[in-house]
Image (cartoon, rainbow, N blue to C red; front, side, top):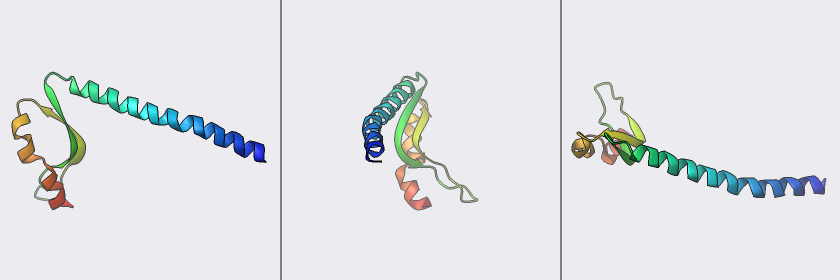
Length: 86
């Protein structure tokens, strides 16, 4: 029984760093792909839209924004709206 537990523990010690590395690489690759969009910009961070008449709103951590509206984006979709909507 002790041998099986030790083998499982040894296996987990090898797998956990591999999973962490793969998560990090996946996030970096996704960010690079999104950042290289020529017609769009990427905003990262928790932001929310203003609520509609029925009280619904959108919340996200990654926003893909058209470069023509990039300057006015923060006025419409921001962190303060998340505090109001919660």
